[in-house]
Length: 151
Image (tube, rainbow, N blue to C red):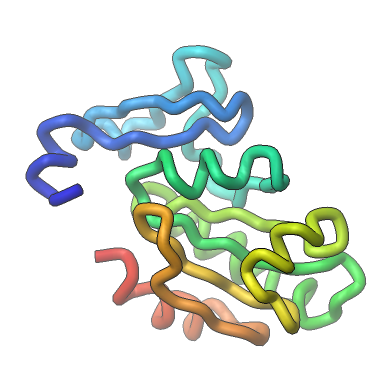
């Protein structure tokens, strides 16, 4: 979707609580919009926890890029990177959707995307993978990696 079309029609997002697809006028993104169905904030400043059941809806129905962290609770580098991913999610909340997928709980998603090591970050746009990065990153490196994918 082009920027002019997106601005005129609004931005489609998937609610992180009820998985409803919501259209938000582009000029209201910074105003703390809420889901009209469940009334939760659409931007909460932290990554969504995605399961296989909801993954494709978030992947294909949101107009914002989706940045996914494939991780596991036992992974030291994953735990080390988690606060940086959380902060990137807070800083870039209206520029991209941030999500985490627990590889232990969702092996089908890990297999589907060929996850060989964790943490692995994948950036998606309009349902397609546009970038991938394996290994933990600090906040500065993460923001630099994300920048070209958020245009």
